[in-house]
Image (cartoon, rainbow, N blue to C red; front, side):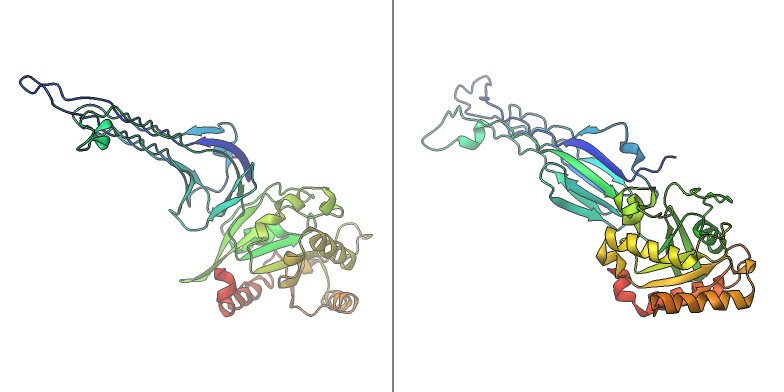
Length: 342
């Protein structure tokens, strides 16, 4: 299934049913009076959060949706049936904007949450409504009002506690595959991740968190290079960022410290608020280096970048250091539960 995280659709709520102009006509009742009923309300359009969905692909080809109109009223004071509401299911983390005005209509973060995006038309009134002591045979009635018509921009931002950042081939997919049941594409060449992946890390019953892996961010990403920058919004809700660095790149000309500086710069240019989030450094692929080389690289990072946040050394392939990292993340999230809930 193709990962789609932005769509533009047009929605139209149902028109309200017209009121009825009618008079009672029965044998032996020559002056029956008005008996026109009201119309029914038009159906509204709602977005509904569906936990089983993780993409907006359902709206990639079908882009126009219309709710049911209300029925017109009829004689004998019979009210028309209201139109059925239209519910469009979207993944958790979806945000709806009015495309024409830019207004943020709302977001859906809880399972089953409903968001009204187009209000159905109001029903018309039958002539019975206008009957009075001075107006015994009213011929006034009203038509139903049109339903709201809107062009929506729906954007998906994945709900995760921890986000993985790094250059291509840093081992992000390998890590999320090692510590969760997620099975992202893993290969020994760059750019194997083409869309975000989510993995749930279960520490023990009742203690778990969600980690998001996005495509690698390359130099120049803030200007549109590569895929990673367009998916950075998916880690905008996270409480903690893990910056994975390939400690043993195949190309010896690549300096892990320079990679770290480059990604930090791209993150700053993309979103200063996101760049200010707590960010831990994770040196990956330590199984390819001696302990002495790992310690030297660790000291270089601290000295070159004045790094003050936490640093971990792991091997996503062998699993070395992964469990202590996951336990420390769980501890951090529990200690900062308020930030996590926000």
